Image 1 (cartoon, rainbow, N blue to C red):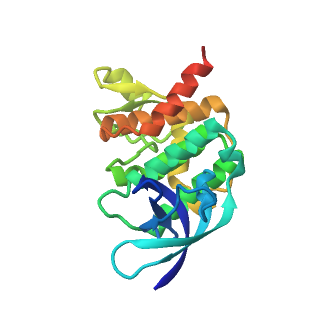
Image 2: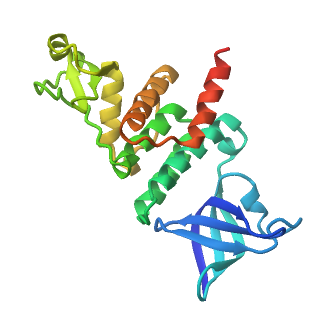
Length: 253
């Protein structure tokens, strides 16, 4: 049977000297592996898949087991991402966060929508750290993490002007008053502005996020705060994150 599905390549695995197994994430949020015969040969029919991140229409045949890729047709080329190494690293980080969050066989159209939204926001010039933070926040629940940045976990205070600490003991924000009384709590400092952005991103629906405008400093601080939560609660380290951190450290030398 012949299938036509829209999707993104999320994995390429060498199968033989001339062929690869291509795995795409389709619009329904399902990972579909396909054999691409002759992929490594010059002038093959799959050149589009070698040109970075693209939204693609895949045509493949499948009877039993793995499908066989027969044709690819580009739908949208992310030119800005593909010509900028640094931006490409952020896109790779976004993809890794989404795909690893699907481990265990999770399937949902929402994963595809989120991945595409991340690429679209980067392509449109959104502050890259903030875009990445938006994706990290939306994927938190699939890593077993719950973000709470709306009120003080101890007294219930909701005035953001009094927020400047995140407590790992209470798994949420504590206000200045409570921190002064309970200084023994294991906390990390974080500005009320960053906490506001974190909660805003949590509440904003994926399709309603049409642009991300934020200073680079705020974007970086937001990303680092969210990454701290992943470090503390998940133990997961994303390989693509190292590329981002290396790039930032080189930029400060």
